[in-house]
Length: 81
Image 1 (cartoon, rainbow, N blue to C red):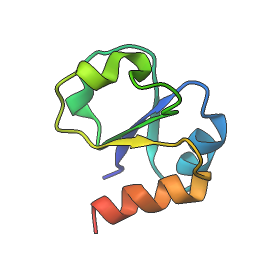
Image 2: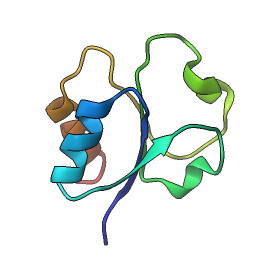
Image 3: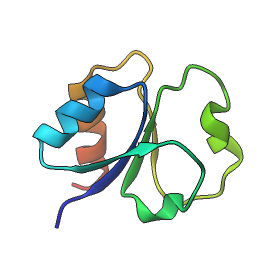
């Protein structure tokens, strides 16, 4: 079963890399049911990206600021190994 990852719209390189690695990737455009994802990737450029900071979810949120697409992938894999 493919892991389902939500990726902020502006992170095209991360989105493409994760798709190549076999993940199911969806755009993170709103604050719908975030618990339906295995991980959420945001830019992390401000302290409250997309209002996620005040959202309650058990889903890991990965801030991609300063990370390569491969490093984001590594963080996702480390959470499930």
